[in-house]
Image (cartoon, rainbow, N blue to C red):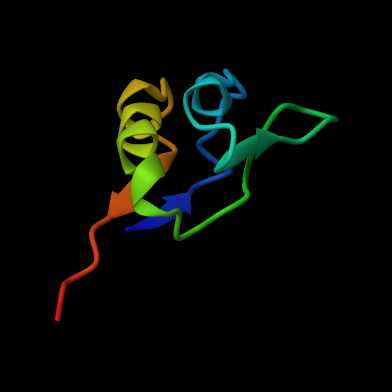
Length: 68
């Protein structure tokens, strides 16, 4: 899994941080999302998918990596 964020779309709602605090944080000055881990471990995949699904600005994209 690879996580991508679009800070230009982010509205600072913080729902991603509540869903997956190990992967997302917010800037102090404006609340815009910060990506802490672009390739989170499998144990966090469900939380990251939830964060992407509930993001009101659709600022989170999740890419699935291909298994070889």
